[in-house]
Image 1: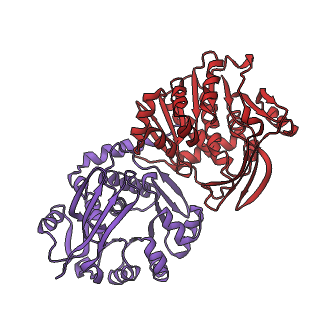
Image 2: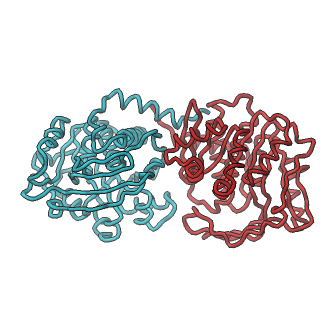
Image 3: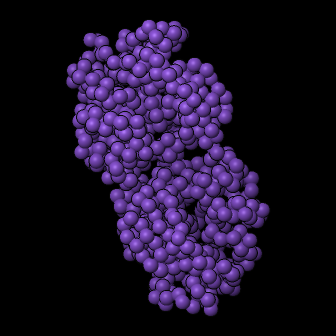
Length: 301
Length: 301
């Protein structure tokens, strides 16, 4: 089934204790697409400037990502520069130049309007609402958000959630949005806003999936060498939504597998800068790590 | 098999957003014993003052805990007063009166010297070393510690670890002790000091067990109502060591179950103040929660 993603496309300059890159391919829609395209046919909507390297466009095409929704504007591409300390948990932003992304008004091409699965990456909730107005009748709509929108556009975010099935956020954001410290109570608040499922991302501590009827909790995959955590959350969402877009039934069993694939794809993403590791991934790599991940949290009777 | 624990016995005054208690039974050896006595015959070594309520002694006896190693000193019992905020993650200490615990020199009664399993709860590593001198030839020795000893008695701690099989600490302490951010690398440093297994406690984020040959990672059990986190780590150790003391072979499978029982016992402990919930626990409660915990992190092929 088709999977539409709307989000950012960026040129990231990143320094970690293990190395650095300048103007590498990044952005939520890019990480998401590179992960989800392993499972599903992906349609991308985003904007770049005239300075966006052609090799990046070729690379997305080569991955089979449908980029008819990629707008090339006259200005400059969104740029972000950040630095991480040894713990890799918190990025210190050196600059954010929104450039063409500042005026981004997602236009869903006519060919994309029948998309069956939709992922609204973290952008202004007003724009996320606007995307939902332009699609026909997706069977699955998921969104991500961040503290900035929770603080500055709470009404729009709540309006958006009325039309969303799956809400992605990290544990801090879920607590901030709901006003509840306990994550089960926080999830119930989210359900009262519309979504049926809350995916609570906890970075190195794993992920929690809560619905009205079930709950599950997975640790992160344990890595010897995490290299650059940029894009891990969007890669998780890509693995998750990519897998779900390929299954007929969205139920507890498929949601568990989706969270596992999200975790696994994210674990690959942080092993190199940009989407470098994701681009080299084989089906075997993913299958092998799925087995190891299952083993990691195995418990017998 | 017999299980010896050496640690603190305290009267705790605790305030959380959900209630408060004054001078309730607490201390690492108490939480540990109440949890481990569900699985194993437990021998306790500790000290209290003449003011220690007789009802608490009766209660430990009633749980089948061997208290021949409990010294009743002339002074006052160790007292701690603390307060937690809504997130229940960090205790704000109002006072710590060590009282008789300040001069605690663990004396292992002759009847305890053949103990097959030993848990050294968090006390001065010099005293932990002293306990090991007094026991014959335990098949399993585990210890806990804290940031204070890592900072102030690193030499003694390292000397202790030469004789320890399983090292318990939280993720911050493991990173501090090893100087490594990556927990796999941190565990390798720990192995170089002596222990064969590192149990890394992460509170609400679960637990990680690392040995040279295997690794596993479990989330915490998810609770609707966490009430008071005091003693959760010692209760975890109690469930873990209690279970292991009852099995013949210490291997990956039994360590996985031990971590599950530790997690489950800790989840019960935080549902009420002091050891109240632990005292009411039935085998069925534990079995039911084991099943739910297994289900929480289940993943099919």
